[in-house]
Image: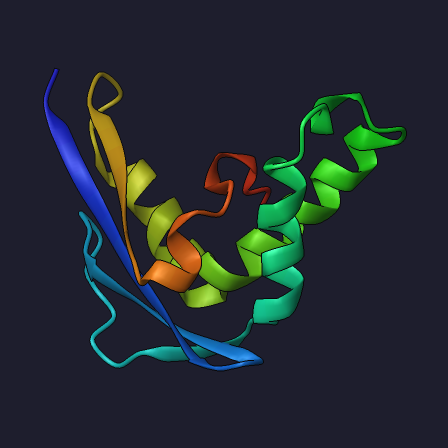
Length: 120
């Protein structure tokens, strides 16, 4: 199966913002970084939660994971990035694969991006 790449680059701008852009995708790219809200302290709490033994046994975990997923989506999938992602999925052939490659700075790399949950 052919594979297309959707490359997202993100890095902290300051303690409350990050910058994100799309290096390349089947639908195009974003050359000028977008500035998005990103509370690094809050994300550090997310990272710490997943490093705690027994984190998966916490009460109301499902709701907490959805909230975490939304926080992560706010950083990596602001509206223009999400639009490119949606367009890329429509452009590729049904049998093709769209690989999402994350190029992240150290402050962002160890977050549980697999829980990213975009609001549509």
